[in-house]
Amino acid sequence: MIIKEVSADGYKNLEDIKLVLDPKMNIVCGENAQGKTNLIEAVWLCSGCRSFRGTKDKNFIGFEKDTANVKMLFSDSQRDQEIGYSIKKSSVKDKNITLNGVKVPLFSRLFGNFRCVVFTPEDLKLTRGSPEKRRSFIDFCIAQVKPSYINVLNTYNGVLEQRNALLRSVSGTDIYNKDQLEVYNEQLAKTGSYISVIRYTFSNILNKYIDRLYSSITNGNEKMNIYYQSTIFKELKDEKDYKDKLFNIYMKKLIDSTEIDIKTGFTRYGIHRDELGTYINGLPVREFGSQGQARSAALAMKLAQAEIIRDQYKEAPVMLLDDVLSELDPMRKRFILNNIKNMQVIITCCDSRSVTEMASGKIFEIKKGRIV
Image 1 (tube, one colour):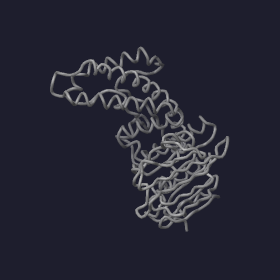
Image 2 (cartoon, rainbow, N blue to C red):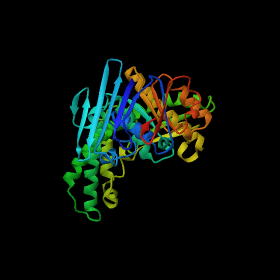
Image 3 (cartoon, one colour):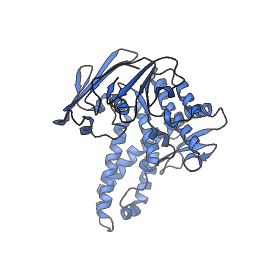
Image 4 (tube, rainbow, N blue to C red):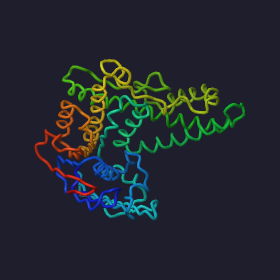
C-alpha cells in the first residue's frame, strides 16, 4: 500500500500542503509546533480511525479557517484510490467524507480501505502503561485484520455501560431488576466469551512475531513473550466453544460476583479487566523492565502489528513514525529503520540529519504549516 499524494489546507495549522511522496522513505522535518504531527494525523484519519491524539472534530479546523480540507491518493495491489474529507466550522457534524468520489457518512466507514500503522512517543509507554493501553492495542490489531470484530467489541462495551449504570443505581440496596440484570449478564457472557477466544488466539499469533523481532533487537540475548490473561477463564488453550462451555463459565462468574458488583457499582470481572501481559526473560516488563527493555518491547509490538497486516493482506501497510526516532538510542533507531525497508514510511523529526541510515527517498521541511 502506497500513498502517492497528500493535500491539506485548513487542517489545524496546515496551509496549501501538497506532497508527492516517495514510495519508500519520506522525512518531514521541522521545529516543534510547525505542523509535522498535524500532517501525520490528517493522513491517519484517512484510515477511518479516531485521532491518535484524541482531537475532537471541531478542533480539526484551524483557528482562522472556516474549512479543513484533506485529500489523499493511494494505491493498493488492486487499484488507485482516493480518500477526501472536508469539515466546515459552521457545521462540524456534517462532514463531507468521500471514498473514490462516493460520499460516506462516517470516518469509520473508511476503515479497511487504507491500512497504516502509526507509532508515536506515547506508544513507547505501551508495556509500562495501564492494562487498558495493551487491551486497546490488541483489540485494534485484531480489528485491522478482522474488521467485524469491532462491532462485537462495541456491543460488549454498550452492554457493560448499561450494566454498570444499573449497578450504580441500586448500590447500597437489595432492590434491583433481576430480570434486567440477567439480560445484561447473558449479553456480556455471549460477546465476552467470543472476544476472549479471539484475543487469546490472536495473542498467540502476535507472540510469534514479537519473539522474533525482540530477539533481533537484542541480538538474541533476551527473550520476550506476551500472554493473554483473562479475569474469567483459568485456561483458554484449545477452547473454542464460546457459545456453550465458555458462555456458562462467564455467566457463573458474573452471577457469583453480583453482590460485590452492586456494592462497588461496577462490573469487576470480564474482558474489560483482562490484561495482555508482556514479559522479558520470564519477568513482567511493567514491574521489572528497564527503560531500554520497555522501549524495545514496544518497538517489537508495533512492528509485529505491521507485519501481521502485511502477511494477512499480502501487502504492507504504510508506517507513520511521528517523532519516535528522537526518543530512541542509535541501536534501536537503526533497527526500526532496517525493519521497515519493505514498507512506505513517513517519518517526522526535528532534524533530518538524525535519519543517518536513509539511503534514498524524499525530505520535506515544514514551517508554520507550509512546506518550504
